[in-house]
Amino acid sequence: MTLIKSPYSLCFSILLFIGCSASKKAVVPDAINEVLNLPAKTSRLTANELKAWGHADLATDTIPGISLAKAYEFLKGKKSTTVIAAVADTGIDTDHEDLAPVMWSNPKDIVDGKDNDGNGFVDDINGWNFLGATYNENLEMTRMVRNFKQQFGDKTAADITPEEMKDFELYQKLAKEVGEKFSGSGYYFNVDFNAREGQPDPYDYAVKIYGDNNIKNTVGSEAHASHVAGIIGAARGNEKGIDGIADNVKIMSLRIVPQGDEYDKDVALGIRYAADNGATVINASFGKGYSPNREWVYDAIKYAAEKDVVIVMSSGNNGQNIDESPTFPNDAPDAMKEIADNVIMVGANTYNYNESLPAAFSNYGKRNVDIFAPGVSILSTVPGGKYRPMGGTSMAAPAVAGVVALVRSYYPKLTAAQVKQIIMKSGTKIDFEVMTPGSEPTMVPFTDLCVSGRVLNAYEAVKMAEKISK
Ligand SMILES: [Ca+2]
Ligand SMILES: [Ca+2]
Ligand SMILES: [Ca+2]
Ligand SMILES: [Ca+2]
Image (tube, rainbow, N blue to C red; front, side, top):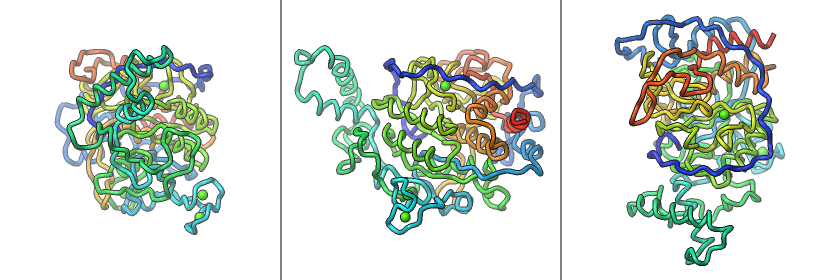
C-alpha cells in the first residue's frame, strides 16, 4: 500500500499489447476560472483551519481546499439519490461512530450461511474480504522471486531458452535486490514467507471465490481504509468527529490491501465485485511497482467502464514522474493510450498556495496524473472510534472519490466518462510555477505535473455538472 510501504524503485516497463483502441472522451467544456491572481497565504494555518483545510475555499480562506461549503450552498434544496462508493483497501472499522451510519449493507443477502442473492459470495453484508485472515505481506517483487524460483529451479543462464531469457534476467535482478533488502526478519522481502499458504493460489485466475465476509480491520494499526472512507463519507452534521465530502453515500468495503503489496487477482476481483453490486465509484488508494498479472486488472477496469463506474486511483508517494516510471494499477499500459475513460489518477497537494503546492512526496505526470487534491495533514476516522491526521496520495484520491460521489448523487444521469471530465475541467487552474516533487526539485509550470493543470474544486464541479446534465 502506498502510504505505509517504504519507497520502492520502479525501473522496468514492459509494453503490453492490449487489444483496445483509445476510448472516446466525453465532451465537457473548461471551467471559467474565477480565482486567479489571489495572494499566497503567508501565515501558518491555525489548528482550527488545519482541521478541515481540505474543504476550505481558496477565494475566502486563501487555502487551496475543494470549496465544499460553497458546493453545498449551491446544492441546497436539490434532490439527491444514495450512491455506493466502494473502498478497495484494508479492513475498515465498521463500528466507528462516524462510519457506522454510512456503511453499505447488501439488501439482498443476510447472515445465514447461504448466498441468498446468488452473486457467488456467501453472506456478503458490507462487501468482501479477499485477504481472509492475512494482513502482513511481502512486496510483489519478493513473491515474483519465489514464483520464479519454482519455475527455474537450479537452472543457470546456459539452461535457459531464448523465450525464457527475459523472465530469467528479471528473476536474477529481483533476487539480488530482494536478497539485499531482506534483513533477516519482517515481511516485505522474506521469500520464505507465504501469507497465502493453504489458500487458493493468488496467481491462478481460475478460482474466483475465496476469502470471507469479515471486512473489519484485524489490528488497530490497520487504519488505512477507515481513514479513506471517512474522507469520502464520514457522517455529516451528526455533531461527531468530522464531515465526509459526500452527504448521500454508502461505503462498500473490499478488503484487498494487506500490509505489503496487494495481489493483482484481489484487485481485479474487488473491482468486479464493486461493479457487479451497485458501486458507482471505486476508490483505489494503493499501488506497487510490479504487476505480473496486470492484464486481469486492465480487464476489470474495462469491465467497470462498461458498467459506468468511476475508478479513482492514487498516483503514489515516491515523488517521481509516473510517465517515466509507472505504478500499478494504471489505465494506460504503454503510459500513453488509455484503455478506458473512467479512471482518475490523483496527485496530492498541500495547503500552500504557492510554489510548494504539490506535496513533495506526490508522484506526478503530465500524461498520467489527471488532477491534484488535498493530501497532507488530512484529519479523518481511524479504528477505535478515533480521529487522526494522515498524509499521502492515499488521502488525495478519496477527496476526488468523495466529489465524484457527490456529483453522482445529485446528478445521477451523468455518465462515468462525463463525471471524469467534469472533475478534471472544473478544478482550480494553477497558473504559476511550482517545485517538482522529489529530492531534487526544479521549478516548472504546475501544468507540467498533471493532465488538467488543476486542483480539485467541488463547487465548480457541481456547477458544471448542473450545466452539463441539462
Ligand atoms: Ca451473496
Ligand atoms: Ca446469506
Ligand atoms: Ca461526523
Ligand atoms: Ca490516465
